[in-house]
Length: 338
Ligand code: HPA
Ligand code: ZN
Figure (tube, rainbow, N blue to C red):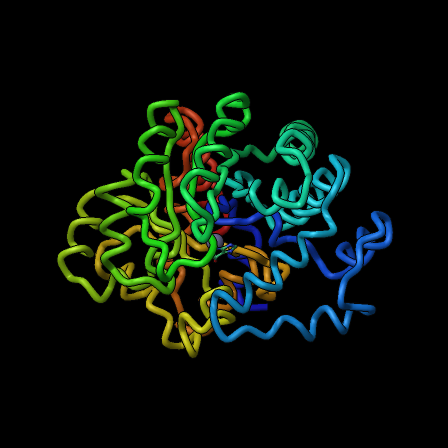
């Protein structure tokens, strides 16, 4: 294997854009369906995988919400989360910032506490056993009404020790950030940091709203920022990180060819892109696979890979002290490995 590929595998990394429900592998989906007596339209692993052909975000979301219907108990959420973290330990991921979608579960009668306790059980264990640190970010489903987001926020307010921030995901077009301005105002008052998916399918205007109305501290996806030079300039000046998800972009037709992925343009424009997996079970790869896919397609060089690796820590929500020590570890690795 080429030097740069081994470097990517071994490099200490942080993942900043990961939906825990999107790590549900077909094997676990079928096993949990059996364990919980949930009916799925799939009999075999091949049936499940055959459903993973998406022409756009909504195609994927339909399959994603169906898949998560097998998750019912605290144990299920624990098993799901721990399986992801064990994979990340093998990929030298040392810090993760994980999204979860409580409304995808409470709408099916699974309690907020069941979801959160299963996930945090696994995060606590990973901190001890796998030395992976984490932050949890609760997303509002933007296709649902504002009042349901407010209800979800009030559940989160009872569990502030476990939830670091709030985000916005699901169907982007037709559901602009402005729809959730009041919810995000309240969330910030309660002490949560904010992020939002913006500019994945939606226009640059949605990125601008995420900045001006939701006061986000990071932009999730943001690919379409490149259509607006003023916005690029503005975001580059702040140094704000963007969570880019190459395999997701390819599978959801945000890019039609990985060779046309805008990642290098983002780097050259002085933006702070990071590499992430989004929904790895559905999009064909975890962290290392995302780095490798984009490195190969764009022929990224070692300096560009190092920049992306570094960005994953500078763009994280680690405390200043923990960020410094992660960056020190990253720099030590770069020196030794070269
Ligand atoms: N975009 C919007 N919502 C999502 C995604 C995504 O990439 N993944 C899971 N929910
Ligand atoms: Zn996402």
